[in-house]
Image (tube, rainbow, N blue to C red; front, side, top):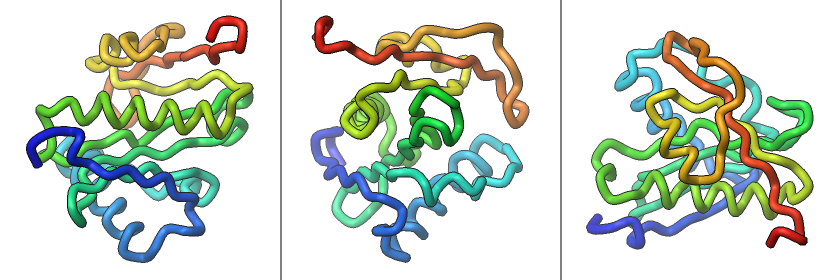
Length: 160
């Protein structure tokens, strides 16, 4: 893969995921969040069936992923994106930024009347700020990793 534009994006509701797609998602999430980040936690948290899954493929390989979380599932009055991950071999090409932009566009299409709230790893705070998020409150530990709550306010039609 030469660049982020070599990636094909698919937004898939959980019930439409194939077994193969779900397996690729599981492998990528565990490979990065559990093994690479040395963070032992239950990744299958029960939220996936209610989410949309944004998958970025290069040829047949899953190289980027996030889930779009509906309002009321994680945050009472906000949608969210989570489990944002790029494959180690696909890093260094701004794929994370492309993934987030695709994910935010999908979230805004699906839930246009809601803000988007995330729990971002602190070392990525500047990255998220550049995507329109603002830090909310103090940092905290989530699975042993420093995080900060961040909010991206929805754009009203008057602002657009």
